[in-house]
Image (tube, rainbow, N blue to C red; front, side, top):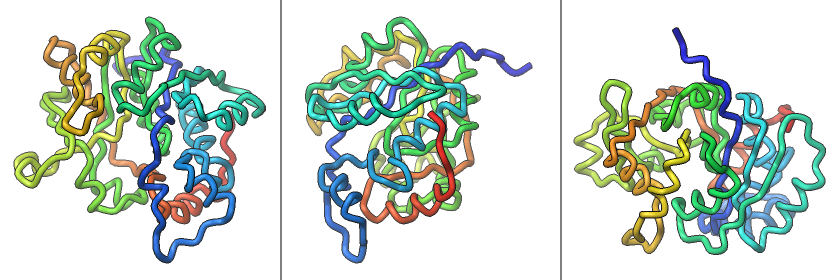
Length: 272
């Protein structure tokens, strides 16, 4: 019988990033003045694709049963705070957690610790529009879990080029459980893991993940990496269920993504 757990209603969205790739000009890409303004500032989740992209992202989570939204933002992101403070909402409460400096994904997670408390929660990117059915499956996962996306599904049913997918973290799983997760896989790792599924930071976490995130040391890039917190939890014997999804994901990380994402979301009216 399928696990009927439905008491997970909190989702944390990481919206603090610098948007370095989005800030870069792209030859042949035409954006509106409003879109360019957000792109120039790296506020990719607020780029207008009929509505701000983050509206669609939150709306998909609400469709999956999420009603408590925590946005991890920077102290300078008053525009995001003001927009969601004024936006009429019917299904979600939106709160904010401040990440003082962009020190990496594990640090973004820690910024939400007080807001989340001792509840299980989802942790998601703010520049990815995830399939609602995958988010709903995560809500039914006790403890830790993550979605393992099929690379072919991301390219054929989403907007993500295969070359970009090759740079995503690879999931090594056995019998539906996470064994390891490899960030920035090299060619040897890609060859070893073959058709492994990939992670797009679509997680369910028990609150114990915060202790593992607090123990993370800076990586070679000088950032506190979420994958290191996950590895810490695995090393402590905490299991991670892997939810397989063949669906597509909309990725809004570069200027060249805007037109495809806008076309895919045309006619949709997210309800928050």
